[in-house]
Length: 287
Image (cartoon, rainbow, N blue to C red; front, side, top):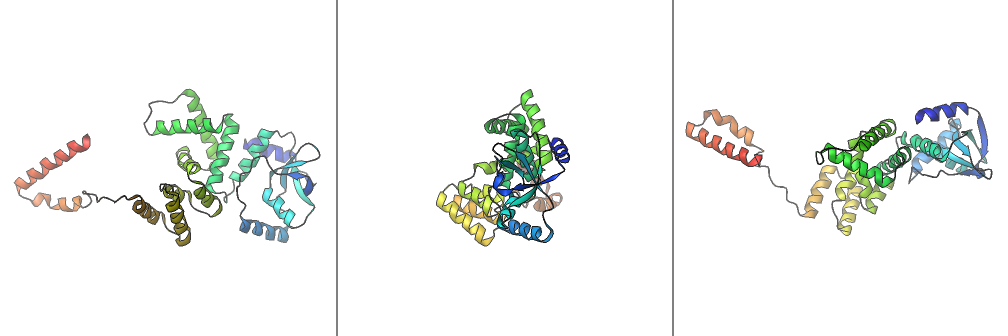
């Protein structure tokens, strides 16, 4: 996927000036939120040194050009009141190729939140594997169940799909398939948590933990507390346990190793009693 993009870009090494009024935005938006701080930083940078990386576009009908990569740069030029923007024109690019290039370009940036990154990777898998999003999720679920030993085997088709998914994640997600499956759980949290991840910088692991609280009002209160007080994941877990009424049970074996250090100094009858108790515990733990 990436090779074809690089080749096409090299072939279109002539920079053209495209009218901003003739540009249309991509079919699929990787970013649900454009960070205003990063936008202002880009604005200042372009003011100082100019546009170092022209946007990528492809020609559409009615004298229009679709932005393949460079939405933020285009927004900055609009804010500056510019009429034209430097662009590389990619030729012979179909819908599928345009989506792959645009998504992969955004996935290689560090400021993409986890929800948008997962959503983009899923969309990329849909395109490359030619399957629906639900089919991709079902495949990942079977792979996860197989890895956990819940099922004994997966089909050859699933094995082939797993290899393609691993390639996509290695190239664009910089993550392993098991990590992606965990991150994918962010797609199932409540809307207020999704918004917090997208727009307020909430870490996805925090969102997953808070989502354990199913009471909407209590969940909202906890989220506000987490954001206001910058709570750690340990603090969040403790508060979730209190809300759910889960009392953390002490581990009866926590200090056992320390106590057993005197075992060799005990009388023989006590040693035999302890050995019998240990055997009983082992039998219970075995099932």
